[in-house]
Length: 373
Image (cartoon, rainbow, N blue to C red; front, side):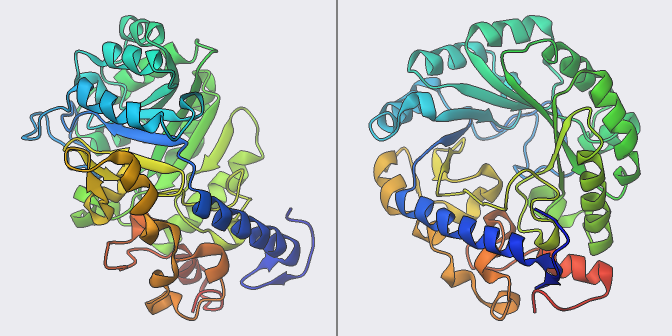
């Protein structure tokens, strides 16, 4: 896809431009059809860590009670009327899902309804016994967070020993071939230089896949100056990801963080695609219905305790599926709009304000100003 074509449009070869345009047309068709293939369940806002970058602003003890399993199962029964359960992954998140004593029972009930399910965890409480119980309950996919080497990880996660516990959990999961498993790493100014060494740790632990992303200004990260992603940090991150992707050992991708301009299809396996509200929905701990949980309160579409989930999914996500209202400010005259359409929604608020433009940050790092203004 890279080739040796003459770069145009901010350094993007014409073949890639054509491929991105074709992909954009497919994305629009998906928005019209909006098949629900991925449903997040924020089962708790409690957590056993105190992460500096937490987008949910979770706490050890939350004023918001855990959502009863029966309430979420009622949503799944409605989802089954519009989606094939076997083709709709339920992703359990939080907070930290493993603070729930009934998590295995939750997974078992989800599986009994025909839905595959997975989980995102910090790994603190995931030992072999816990893992065996989850596997017996139908666990099909697992993501564990590991944010640098020991000192950096513990600093970001706010609890001493969290690196060692997460790494022990990773080693347990790596021995299980039947589940989809990856590690996600949040890059900060503190850990950017550790990525090559961390890659070797992951390979040694038997990890098959690694997703990398940068902190975005939500939750606690919005007010933490030590977590700021500037153009230099973004470029270093993307350059490292591209280098690591060609090194073998494990599959490396930059996350679905946003449109990356010349790094499209170089830093990850596919083109940029924010599926929030098109293929992805979420049920938050208080019953709010949204899309990707990273959006938090900015794009709430309803609440399961007063609205029918299917009706909400079919009728209330227009602001996520049709993006023209976001073409303001820096996006108004952007030549990359047709591929980016305003960047990932978790980088916006419901008024349309854009917290971060990847192209602008890359231009800042390179001292140019050609592709997005």
